[in-house]
Length: 444
Image 1 (cartoon, rainbow, N blue to C red):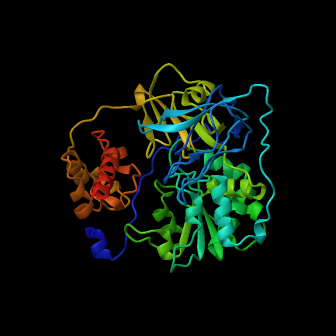
Image 2 (cartoon, one colour):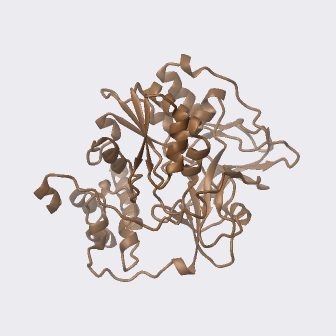
Image 3 (cartoon, rainbow, N blue to C red):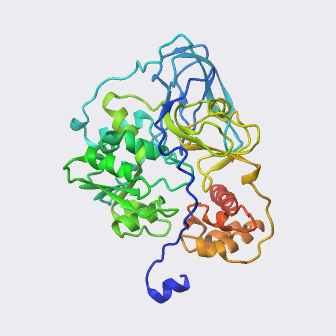
């Protein structure tokens, strides 16, 4: 237990006030990006088993048509992002550097690209289990970046009761404003999705948490909610990482999720606003997820904005539409704190991509040895010792990191990497350590 916590008896939440860099895109309405000449739809865009192809090479497909079925309960189907022809089913590059199976689609230039697949369904007459199945059929996953299948979170664990749905509208990552625009432009869909989640989970209420630098989003949600009392909208202080579920739950409801525990252990279920907006939009018409809102921003683009992008759009095409400059040093999928740098522009936009951040050489630096300044310790919202964890990671002592220094309590917010004067990529070390421990346990 950290010293201050032992003295005061209270859990002290830390964090950072980082430069937001949101002014460029926060006021820009969502606009549709043109379809690329080739779409690459990976069969694994989520946590869990990959989807299983339903189509064959050369087959004509209609926009919105299922092209791959779920590979199990912890899996989701894929739907055609455009009307066209299946060119081939083959391996494709991913942001993590590995090759994954994907369906290559050539859109028809002459097609209207209307969504012609779907049928109305009455959600009010569905049982909770039927809602879970219907949400799985939409292919919706966590659109805040985690990409965990949403229908799994809608299934109440045995022996637990969910009393409150927490809707995460913080979007505390610098540069990202996609969720902000969804709340401003689609507040009705967000609230409808929240009520669907409440029905599935048997929750009595929902609370939406939005950082107080997005008061226009708060106003839009309150207006859409009207006089309803089952959902409340709350403005919370702007501080990174306020959008982490443990932080948000604490500030909204004063509940603490146990170490290595789940929100359901304290009667909660947490969802991202964009996830619920998609459920509210897709579920009534039994349609599938084929596109998402992505923020494209950073010093390396000339036309930053919030784009509605077809899933499977290659980064190369997306950056060309956003006016990528010739001085690009790094492209990050997500935000600068928790995002993943990609080494290939042939990687496609997938369900979990919240943003595309383009940096130039002015924003990247060289790594130097640790100077033992303890800035990372002060910044860590979970009160871990990132410096010690980093040193252990450098020596491949991964098991010790987990058993003695609570590695699994780290949710990879990036505060430690941000404040480090030596530019040590601590979060990347921790991700590698977690993966190595998972592989070790699987072998055992």
